[in-house]
Amino acid sequence: MKKFTRTLLSVGTAICLYGAAANADTLKIALAGPSTGPVAQYGDMQKIGVFAAIEQINKAGGINGMQLEGVVYDDACDPKQAVAVANKIVNDGIHHVVGHLCSSSTEPASDIYEEEGILMITAASTSPSITEKGHQMIFRTIGLDSMQGPFAGQYIINNVKPKNMAIIHDKQQYGEGLATAVKNEVEANGITPVMFEGVTSGDKDFSALIAKLKMNNVDFVYYGGYHPELGLILRQAKAKGLDAKFMGPEGVGNPDISKIAGEASEGLLVTLPQSFEKNPANQAIVQAIIDKGEDPSGPFVFPAYSAIQVMTAAMTATGSTDTEKLAEYIHANTFKTTTGELAYDEKGDLKQFSFVVYDWHADGTKTPAQ
Image (tube, rainbow, N blue to C red; front, side, top):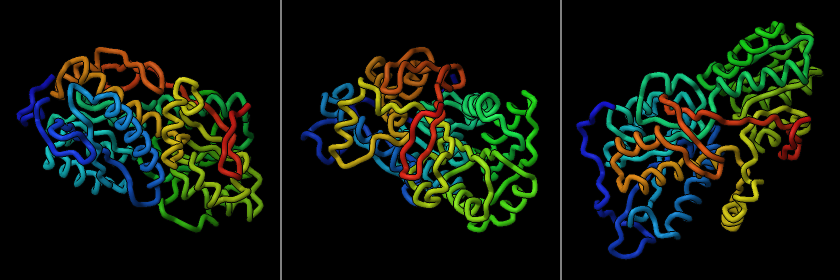
């Protein structure tokens, strides 16, 4: 592992923490993701998980005699703002980060963290390219597009069996990456999509797209991207009489898609991480989240909780906050977390992660697909 010139935070560094006991040492952990913008709901999921974990750890006495403090940074899921946030975290002297959320933001930020010797664990970014650069400080607690895309593809092949399939994406790293992975999987198994096209994030009128879907007699659409655009596509498709089933990734698995699409969201297929909030072993955490008036069911809540668990378990085992030592320990060990036992490969990716296909309902709830 390369050596870093920047001075790393020592265990004995004292920082004032609101709510902590007097004279207690504090370790700041940055939480980077969207607090504003069209996908801020997913940033809220990260916050719920991270702060629930920090609260539980602090109640149990903290880590190596320190209390933890989460510091939120808003990147709005915008790559340029993510770079500014990463530089701000560097300048603020924080050396441990959970985030970012959107892959297009995480990738440029991760380059800065690697250069500066800052440990980063993302609970949401799934693009394989983030960890294909040989970085040693970058990890995830979620699976890759290269896992989720083929998984969705196999469900389409074996369960949907479409006659005329279209694949649509939002031209962004996350959405297009997943769409491409699905395309490759279905084509390798004898299904040739009649359309593979991109829409522009932020668009409101999808009349031309829907007309083309109807012209091609499309009966199934896979969408790679986030819920704001797909919600509008679903609503407008229903209004224009398109009789097609839709499927999307965890980026559309948000109750707000039902607020946008209404009844048109009924029957949408969504690939998501397991419903970790239903695991009996997590019920005390679930109740603590509910008691704060928050929702434990978002797909990134428990992966974010696990990111804190992995990071702090390494701190406890090494007796250090030195990020180089932590990264070496994380690469070499297995961690018991709220999302299961996590083990890492040389890239910082999980060796195993399971996705589940759900039927989405118009009331914003989901049930496992048959």
